[in-house]
Image 1 (cartoon, each protein chain N blue to C red):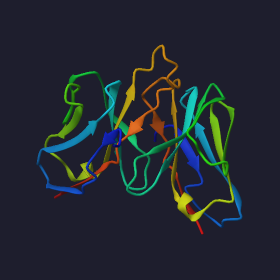
Image 2 (cartoon, chains in turn red, blue):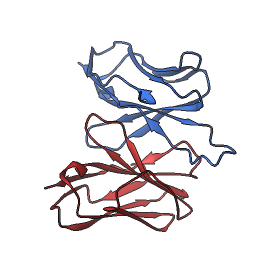
Image 3 (cartoon, rainbow over the protein chains, first blue to last red):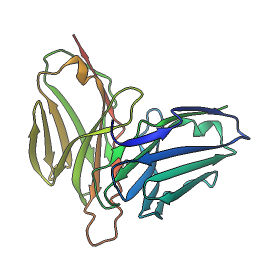
Image 4 (cartoon, rainbow over the protein chains, first blue to last red):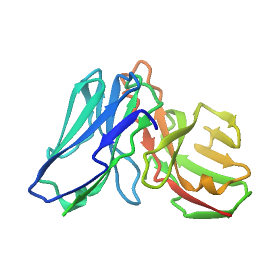
Length: 113
Length: 116
């Protein structure tokens, strides 16, 4: 695989639930990203972390809360989501945030009911 | 106007055909151009990576960039059923000096089906 592992692969949650998505990379990269992929839309960058520091928040609603405890792990904490948040959430990593070669995980298919 | 335009397809071709996938863009600052392939239920994987204008070949795949027309292409020769996937173009402005975080801008993706 790509060296970027995401769990869970599938998640169904109610609008009042709290859940977390996990991403782990084994590539020695220093930058990690969260993307949202919705049907018939381009990939949308949500957050960028470079050396554990958040360097970009692409106007993401506060019901999505990222956490990066170290360069190998990235979390996305979810609470009070809406049905329109249902999508494929992809994690990616690269050697550094200015590196253009990003490696993606397989994604978490999220359904909000 | 979207920064990157890509026809979503679907595009259906017979096995062995030459496939041409294209993207247009509006931001003249883009200098790095990538093609990702995404199989169903998988994450995107980097297929080709080119800098500035010109051609780059890798096996059956050729990436072409025409900066004057703001147009990039991916050609697949002798297409195989295993090439059936969604192909995403992506691009980024120069990351050096400006503090740019290397923000990739993706096209919508073109779904390709190669029929045996």
